[in-house]
Image 1: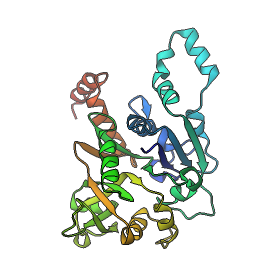
Image 2: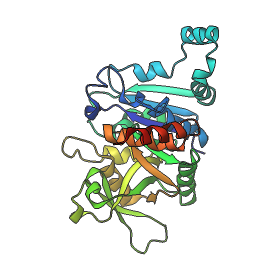
Image 3: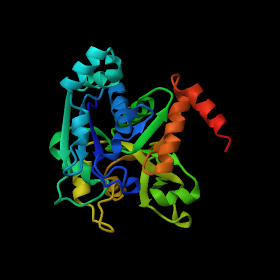
Length: 292
């Protein structure tokens, strides 16, 4: 059973500057909750109760958000508004251990680095890994991650990566997967190319978050060369796939969303809002009233 997760939240989020200059972009809300909270709720839904957040040096806002605030709770009690933080209480009740790790400056920049930063937290356990600005949009929270874990266990894999079918022009944004031909394991990854031109892409299946890894990903990362000044998780997956089983599992009954730029952030808010019983009608009315 997988009970640990690592969430990468150490980047500078330059596409959201200056808005997030003084706090983590992962606290920007989708509807009425920070986007990173959806990831943690996804973890809880599959039984993960130990969560490590790797954050940027000097930014304590994520740690502050997920820590109880007695003064705030006293105020909410007095004003009859305790329900305003029910979703946070749900997290405090279901996460046994939060660990907050500053990404060391001696490690290279890159989307694989938070795993190295959390090596002690991971230990010898398998774990789920998330980019802090990726979301799994699905009808029932945790269904796709549960499927990934089942595949991971069924085939004794050392890595399962989510993939999303994208338009050719969008494959430049991530890793393009080449599947192993005639494999007895469905969706076995042969290799992936990071941010290729469409004409060079082996497929338009793009690697996205989440991932499920065994501890074997750590030596794979340590044996992966720095490319263009960064430690790319795609390159580490290639290293891992040489001697271990890596599966690139297409998203089914789910959709990958990113909040990495303002337009994608707006799209995510709209989709979550239209799925919400609380906000759906208000959002539909708002869209109709704009007359744009």
